[in-house]
Length: 108
Image (cartoon, rainbow, N blue to C red; front, side, top):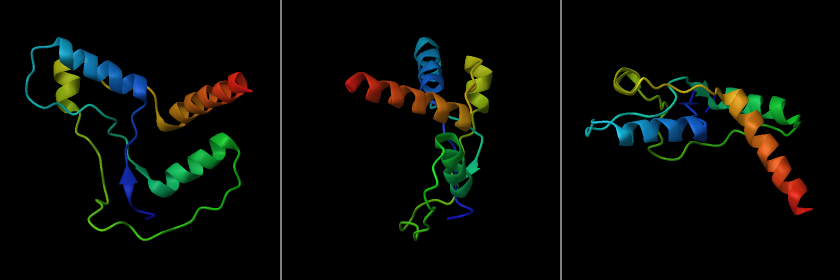
């Protein structure tokens, strides 16, 4: 799991890319995502840092057939849509944390 990677695209970036694609002339598949890879361990440590958590990071066996890498090639989106993500993982986590804190406060 330490070397397993994922890429994370913040929702506003994803929506922007999808909207650009829907307004264009391209009808073939176009990857809309974030090509920056993070190991799952790096992601977990970033979550700890952003949230101030001291939770233990627990390693579990990977599910069967789970890919070790997921990284979209967004060169077509860059070329056709003039699009690429703007919000990195840490900034997206901070925005999400602020949102959920505000929801909890409003519900109290």
